[in-house]
Image (cartoon, rainbow, N blue to C red; front, side, top):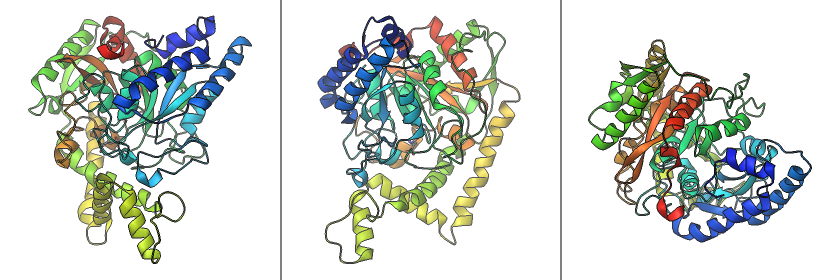
Length: 484
Ligand code: GLN
């Protein structure tokens, strides 16, 4: 049962093959067994999960099941979950019990899913390796000496090790796609505004977007059916009809044009990863797609620009953590200034502090025009590259990451090298586009992800392309041996 997709689990629950209490207990047992090694959960909500599962079983018996009734799921610890500790993997929020529920998790719960717990992540979602968490690094189930990717590292580690059949993630610069790639999973970052950010702790508000982390595109579609849609409590959420993401999965893809940006295949890309991506593209050709080389000339500016915009937004978003209203407060402050500085100094980790300092600097009078304003202008150029590309192609494809999972500690002391691991994912967030990463093969036993980038609100199209590929390949069904 623990190896099944959520589509299969939902069918098994409806047919009575398994009850939600049995299923939930199975996953809770697996979490207890493997979490000490993988460290993918910050909180395990056993009692609530079993109560929700029992309620789900009653609905199933009464023939009154919603789409995911009784299916277990894990949530990244960035989503506020009412009455449950919500930490964002920061000491700052180590004592924070959320007084309200995020829209995303609420919609998933309303559809009957059972929350198993809250997953580990990089502190405030800042990182690419899950090593900046206050609760310690997460291990990659494919090789526990390696990182799972970040910032949604706990979510991918849990799903890859079959400790949860699906999880939520958030993606500001690649945090769904990059870890999904490094752990052999399907991850989708929706168009900016497609999924509500209400109750999702903000990192960089103009870039953050929540999405599903699953085995298959079919499962990602099921979760997108719940997560997507307008929310009046998020002023950036878009009022636009939500399609049935499951309905278009089987559409034919003959004649569709796939653009391969030449900048995504240059010297930074590992040769073995390149070979896997080439083979995946051939598979699409065999399915009838047409391949075309394109150029996204401002690709090289995406990482440097992001590291102006994201820290700028984070420095303002994180100013609310001042030791006054909620979160960590230092002992015996001498005065208000001491309260602020010591609470923030003690509560935040090194990477978060680095970003707050960079952000404060680029927004300060005298530097605003030189850095922040310039970055915003380049951001427009990056979007324009994609706009031009989508005039000639339907989907853009390339590697999700330049290499497979790296070793724990390998890049931890070198922020710039760490930042470059998001070189193929960040531009998508700058432009606000949807993109997915799907498993496409292995290099030395480590998973490789293929990235699919779509035009605005074309998530259905991406899921359709991903599903077609997953029908003729089985990379997405491979499991790390120890966790089968
Ligand atoms: N790795 C990038 C960063 O550190 C992106 C993180 C994210 O998408 N949340 O900012």
